Image (tube, rainbow, N blue to C red; front, side, top):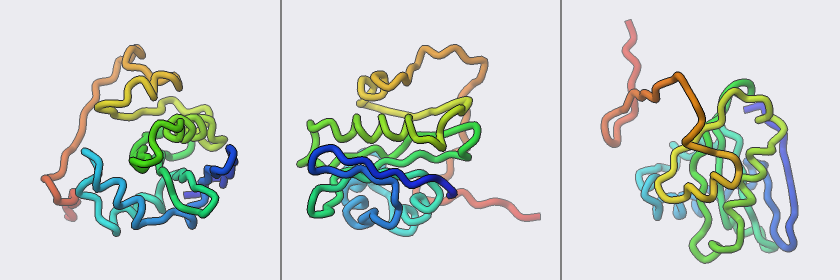
Length: 156
């Protein structure tokens, strides 16, 4: 991923897109406590981070409090995913801050579409302009791999 590194401070917290700061074990612990990330393995997360624009929020002791990422080609499309805040850091606006910074990221401007799925955080994303009311002629479709299995291409 060839994206620009962003570092922004708010009080004692720092938001950074520097992948080298991501605490893999801490993010895995957070994801394993979520309804969507329980099956994430360390190799999966490493590969996802390598190929996404990632944000982390860190306290003054460099403890990672939150994580989010956008999967993108940096030209036409981005998919916001894995937005998670450590349970003891929720209610402080950290998730909101991460979404704000990802939407404003200079490498994610001018896209045709910025998408996400949410089960229970619709109001968070609506504050940043995400909507289910956007008119579209497209139909959402997916190719789903078997549970726990990675999709495997057929080579001829």
